[in-house]
Amino acid sequence: MTTTSTIDECLVVAESLARKAGDMAMAGRRRGLSDVATKSTLTDMVTEFDRASETLVVDGLCSRRPQDSIIGEEGAAHTGDSGLTWYVDPIDGTTNFFFDLPMWAVSIGVTDAVGPLAGVVYVPVLGEMFVGSRGGGAFLNGRAITVRANDTLADALVCTGFSYSAESRVRQSRRIPQMIDKVRDLRRFGAAAIDLCFVAAGRLDAYFEENLHMWDLVAGQVIATEAGAIVTDFSGAAVRPEEVMASTPALHSDLVALLATSRPD
Image 1 (tube, rainbow, N blue to C red):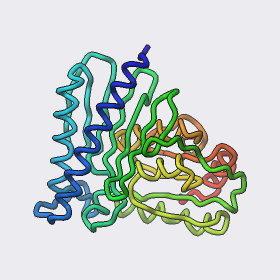
Image 2: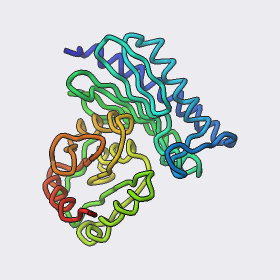
Image 3: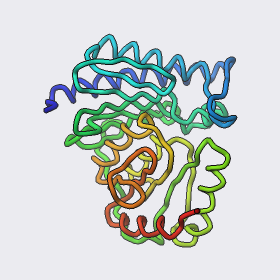
């Protein structure tokens, strides 16, 4: 069983590394970008600061938690024997970062045999550090946060995201006309970790997206859950990267039903 002292140590390490990496990337972005490439599609970008941020975080984890395993978005991999695994998204929202929009973050989460254990999501341009741990609550810049008290679907501000695949984006967008008149409004910020944290902080009532990865999900999931959100797949079963939905408790069943009736296929 993971001890409280281990969780506390993980949070201290993650928060320190996220802040260092995020501030480094923000300073670099202000100087300008010189190395921008694409990965799976033309909309799936990577910059020199994605790579530098991941190197900083992974080196720090290897130094301070060498017994833990690590998986990073940009290819970092380290195998440990502690039973803990770190998932690192060095810049979640690289398109926003490229276009100098503020909605990007460094996301660092850790899991144990049970699931997401602790995580931090640092949004440098906003100066916001979201922190959460299993059984320990969720916090924004040291202040406890909770989901919004809303039980009316028509009053719900809902956020979503789209795949890097053009074909998938077209398919996913077909949901929107079937949902837009059922909720207050829809948003698309372009950074899954931030979206999950905004549900946690009561800035959104719900968020859903398909085809994420564990590094997109782990930190934001534990933060949202500890803030009182229900985090599942679209059917209400256990969450998985292929389908992620986070919502206030009172709206969860309504949103499951709405997603079921707005299937794009």
